[in-house]
Length: 227
Image (cartoon, rainbow, N blue to C red; front, top):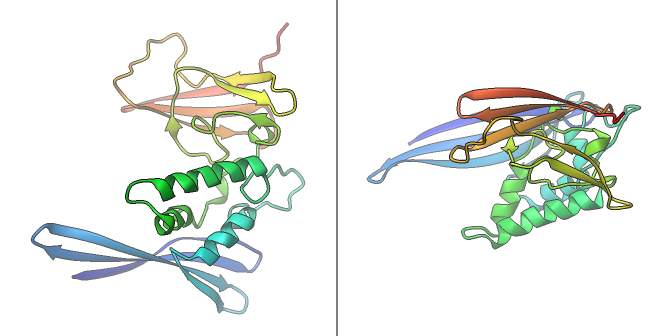
């Protein structure tokens, strides 16, 4: 049996505090082969006083409650900047509904449950500040769109065959759409296509990187003004 302890991407969550994720991996060999058993702990450390403020397990309901209620403090290094459009479960009702739906899916899934849901949600921590977009065009209080195809978290998602449509929350009218696929080229439905978006902080501009097998396609999405 072998033990490994590693620190995973420590992140600053306040001016003086840093959150670390410590993982202990145990390798055990048996008749069925080699198995990995992983346990995680979160340590909140004050850089000025060199004091350990708190330690949480990766199944802590207390830490999950803090994360859900103060999500922006965990992920946003520029929370107090002049240009800020936060859209998270702690600041937006629509984002909160999406997170609750995701949590309920894990709770009700086979081999799921409450503990597994907590573990999955806390598995996002620590969050890189660059992982989330502050673009107003992704603000769920302004626009309604299918988070299956694009979200404020900039990570690869399945690429759909149709444009991603954004509707105004107040009127329900279609305001704009983004075509993530390969224009003018046939679509091969036998392979999985992934796409990741990076939005400008406030301008109507986005970059998408689409991957199909070993092929990468980069698209620039800009506002189209009708003449």
